[in-house]
Length: 316
Image 1: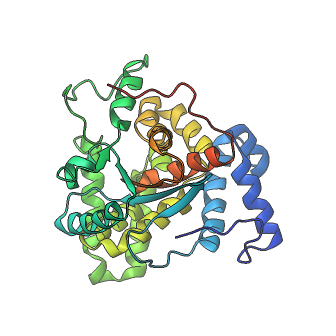
Image 2: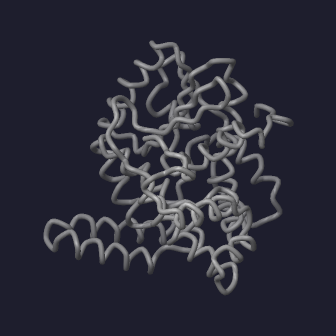
């Protein structure tokens, strides 16, 4: 999966390229309101999400590629490959990832995993490393003066934050499962309609910024049992998420702690990879699929000279 520069992408008309660039350059919801001419920042965010997805669907083509699916970002002479996965801890995904990660390690590349993924799949791979993204986010959350979702999390827990214990989360998963399981009975078109209705009813403002809807549920479920579908899951998030400053501002307004646990970790993982990469290195980052577009964004900022590692410190 590679991108063509929107300034010369033949799949976009000149007008579409201009719209894409204006959306991509927006750095705040107030600026987005000017770009979309919507009535307020809330409406601008929703309108931009629809337009962005249409343009991205036209630009991006999720074709199968040899090896691990993902995207490549060059930062100077360093090459970063970002691979979004489900981290569902299935035998199918474990076997697929271990085979391909062994190959890239044998080729001399570095491998860094989102915190928790290394323990799940690669704890016997000495040359695969676990990043500190979750631990870093937990520290930032404790600094916030907000009601915390993490008060009951054991102090030694360093896995992935999954809000599946609440009634709302369980109910949503149950509804999505029923819709997906019945697709063979009532057909794909009706299944998609039911899924959209369920998403509209059950997806919160926060869920809009984290991709927590029926489509992501279905694609994750497929990819967990058949990793050949990982590229479709990656494609979904790359077409759904607006550029990071916009998603982060939206989510920060509705749930600042959740913003730290999700999109802020993208920034941390990009920084972590840059911190450890030497001249000419090839680096593979294995992360949850929802993190992939954000990590790409921050790596691109490094390449453009708009981001540095000033102040970066490893967490204990």
